[in-house]
Length: 562
Ligand code: NOJ
View 1 (cartoon, rainbow, N blue to C red):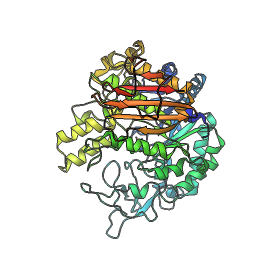
View 2 (view 1 turned 90 degrees about the horizontal axis):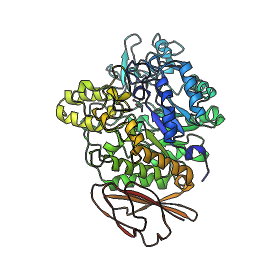
View 3 (view 1 turned 180 degrees about the vertical axis):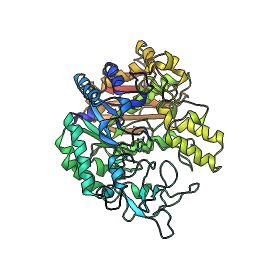
View 4 (view 1 turned 90 degrees about the vertical axis):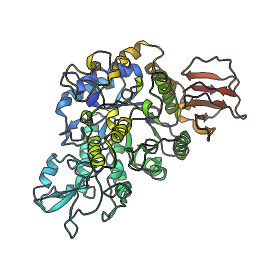
């Protein structure tokens, strides 16, 4: 296995809007990030992934960009960005930007031009189609934020495609001039010294030939276009071209967000000789428990399902390609609420257990802001307290047409809304959690008095210090990065255990995902003499036999055998 710095790194995701507000306008900003760089250095991370910072009318909080070469007003100026980059680099922290080029904002000058006339030179930067014979939309695809994926343009009598909101028109990657523009803007940032890109829904760039109708699933009005707009026929040509033209010229980190991707496709995106991307984010584990209406009708899920998914990816990419590892991000609920147990009794234990499990798998771990102190999901009472366009539209659609009652929908929102991950970082017990001196753009979680950075930093047994230790272990033991994975006790519904092996060295990772006390059985071929305990979330008697071990609720241990 080839050694690479981005395999050894730990990435920390910042959602700038909710990270730290330096000027009291209630919105996080770049100067706020600069204020917290020493905190991130203390945590020990290597790379910051910044969710979009470009100019944007914020229909989708920056994932709708109106100027790819400038900074969003609320976040600051280009001078602030240059300072952030310099100050991060001075602390050995790299900066990875979000590259959002499946779509732009409808307020981008390209789209403003494209809209003007059918023969405008920018027309072909976007995906325009005439309606069907009866004048209806060109196909039946639904937008991911509700309604049709097509918007009618009065002036030209054509529709344009928008897989997300109608303020996020899809760019036309068939057009080589558009592709050249994107490569140019990528060079613009890389030449400034940026260290890589997280590429937003990058597997959507190529759509199925002819844009055919999609299957309409039960409970939905529009077709599910995912199989037709993800991993399309030209996607690998585009990414190889992007790699040839841009990526290969810099020593950077690249991760593609790839909705609905399967392992076979992921091998094509990340295989070392393919010259596309370093790694991708798949969605299989975060889709666990999705019901008929997807995440809006959540169902119970089993640990064996989670293990099957994780193991498939661990084995699948062990020879070639590379995994990214994450429990949460700005589109997902909080890790401890989703996969652990956020009750006062088990929050700290289960957050540490989840961190152990993830950081001991093979791949590059991603920490989402607030995860390192065990921030939890929020339960706002009113739907009007929610800011996320996806949440607000889903409430309108599913409650509006009577498929879900108000209280069913609120329960789903409490479990799965993207705003769970977007409440401000809880820096302290102060008003507004020390995030802002003004009025925050979204409510602060009322548990910030107990759960906050200040408190965690002072407590040597905190989740924060546990994460620091996990990151330090990764720097010390190459096996955590490069060792190969083997699952143990595959059929167990409470314990997720696995080994990592590199030459003569082995790790045993034992994680109890339940509030019960199941028994871990060490396979007889593994000799546990001379073992060293690397980390655990309870006090452990080092002399204790581990052949048959009764685990405490949410217990996690990692042993090293040499
Ligand atoms: C994925 C991003 O993570 C999400 O926040 C956004 O809404 C969509 N892509 C559209 O850009």
